[in-house]
Every structure is written in C-alpha cells, then in structure tokens.
Amino acid sequence: MVSRRDTLVLSCLLATSVKPAEFKHTKFKDKLISGMVKKGYSPEFAEKTFSQLEGFGSYGFPESHAAIFALIAYASSYVKCHYADAFCAALINSQPMGFYAVAQIVGDARNHGVEIRPVCINRSRWDCTLEPMEGNERRHAVRLGMRLVRGLAAVDAARIVAARADQPFDSVDDMWRRASVPAASLVELAEADAFLHRSNFSDGMRCGRSKRCAMSHCRSLLLRPIAR
Image (spheres, rainbow, N blue to C red):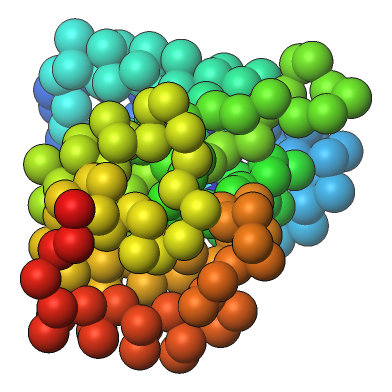
C-alpha cells in the first residue's frame, strides 16, 4: 500500500468533475511515477498505482467530497509519519472502525520503529497510552490498553486502575482482593498474558511464570470467596 507524499499529493488533486469517465489530472502521471521510482518502487508498480488512482477518479466524484477526504488523508499521513506512536495508540483507541484489525495496526507500527508494550495489570489503563522511552525524548512506546482484553468489562478495568493508584499489585491474589473484580475477569486477563510482564510483581511473578500457571491460579479463584 503506497501512502507516501507523492501519492498523497495526487490524491489531493483528485477533485474530479461529476462527469463520468473523465480524469482531469493525467498530467501528474509522470511526476508520480518518476517520484515513486526514485524511492525504490518498480516502474510496473508505479504504473499500476496510477491506474488505480485514475480508475477511482474516473467514475465521478463531487469536488467538495474529494477535497475534504484528501485533506483528512493528508493530515492523517502527516501524523503517522511524524508521530507514529501517537497515531498507533489513537487508531486502536478508536476501534472498531471497520478498516484494519488491531493486529495490522500494531504490526505496521512495529515496522515503523514503534515499541509496542503488552497489556500489563500494573501499567495498562483502559485505553492504549504512551510511555516514555529511556534515552529518547522524542519517541514514546505504546502500552496496549485493557480494552484489548476480550470479555473484560470497562468497569472492571477502572476498578483495577483505581486499586493500584497508591501501590502496584504484588501478586494475583493481591490484585483480586484489592480490586474486587470477579475472578472471571482475572481469567480473561490471564488469557491475554497481562500477568506475565516482568515488572508486574516484585516477588518474581508469583503464580505467573507462565500463561498456563496464571490461568490455572485465576481459575482456582472462581471457587473461593474474596478474602478481605
């Protein structure tokens, strides 16, 4: 998928007339193709890209619609290019959008140098957040939020965040007692590997050295009342 400046400039010029089968900006073909070739794309791929844009612009599009859509695409691409970490977090927090899956967004962010940190019961909030990176003041790591834990209710995530405000959890049992969330929610977190981050527990991840161990321990809580 091409999303570089040359393609975006042409997209911004796709203010076509309402007459079908008329593409007004063929004169930009050489500029687009030569620019893509200079950036390492093959001439065949560049030709195909222009043909797709040409086909899109030929079926008739109101100029106002084309202009505003191109502006949004250009602004989004600028943010992605210069603030890839914030762009990734914002896209995930806006799900569901119906375009790209979270795994695709995360994979693309990693390909562009963004550090992705897993869901963590002592670090994650409901939404994805940005965390500072040691030795890099301009870039941030993306901490995945608990919104990505399948089946976890937002209200349970809020309880977890509130309960750790003064002190991080030091064990699965400690979290269960202090957060007062259902044991079933802990199982969902265990299935998402939220207990496995090395910074979660000061005791070497008690009952959390593996996903299977964490899930087994959380499931055992289903049969126990919360001990205050």
